[in-house]
Structures are given as C-alpha cells and as structure tokens.
Image (cartoon, rainbow, N blue to C red; front, top):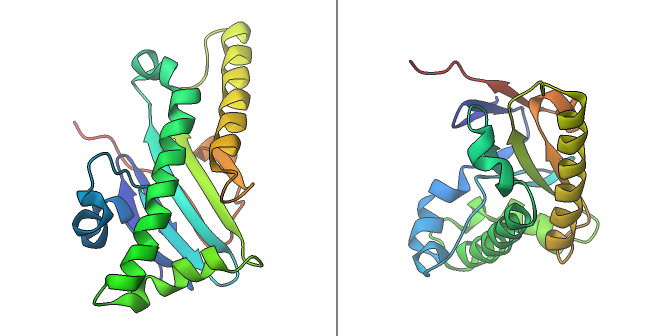
Length: 185
C-alpha cells in the first residue's frame, strides 16, 4: 500500500515498506520540540528498511523566481541544517515521550545504526527553462554552491545531502516518486 503526501503543488508517493510522517505538521512535533521558540522541522520524514531514512524539505519556488533568487544559497542551507537538527532531536524526544513510541522507532533506528543510510533531500522546484545560456550557467553555479553548503550544514549527521527536483531526480530512491499537482485557479 502506498502513502501519499501533498506538499504545496507537489505530490510525494511512497510505495510499500515506507513509514512516512508529515513531520512539520505532526502533533508530536507541534506539542513537543515545536513549542520551543525558534524550532524548525523538515516537511517529511520517511524510512524504509532497505532504503534508509529520508529527511525531506520541500521548497517550490515556481512562479516566484525573482523573490527567491537570493534565498538559494547559504541562508537556505543554514535553514535546512537547523530543520534537520531540530527534527532529529524532536524524533528522539518523541520516541522517549510519545504515547505511541513505536511510530518513531523505525526513524530513530536509522539514526542510531551506523550501517543504515540517512539522506537529507532538499526538494527544490524552480522555474525553467532559463532565457539565456548565461542565466543557465549562473543557475548551475548557484545549485552547485547550494549543494556544497547543504553538505556542510548536514555533515554532522550524514554526508548524503542532495538538492533534487522533478527534472533532476531520476528515480534515485526505490519506491519513491514525485509529481506536480495541478495549479489552483
């Protein structure tokens, strides 16, 4: 049975074997670490025994390229690093204090087992194509810099941090797909 999570204009579908939480809206986050001022959370936490743990933050900048152009850099990487940090702490706290600790055990189990894969995904959708080759090169340079900064912000947890979009994803993870939802009028 698959699990579907809609985040903005994107639909994330997780196949059999995935345990998925819409973490930033989950009551355990809101009533736990989320009560601390300044706490942040990733959008989705998903784990699968064969695929590892995914910490997914979604940014959909389509139709907002100009306003968000300057965000795609060190500030976004720092924000993601903070969200990952607070989400990890929040899941450990939920495992210790939840009335349903079994819900968090699979996710935290991946965190504490050095042999299990932990990946941080920034799912970043942007407007394309770029009107000129120069803008395309500038975009690729910004993306490369962003990936480097995200890896730096998350290296305390994992070296496996990625920036992906529907255009660049390519089925990297088994049993996981993303589609665009229709825009609302």
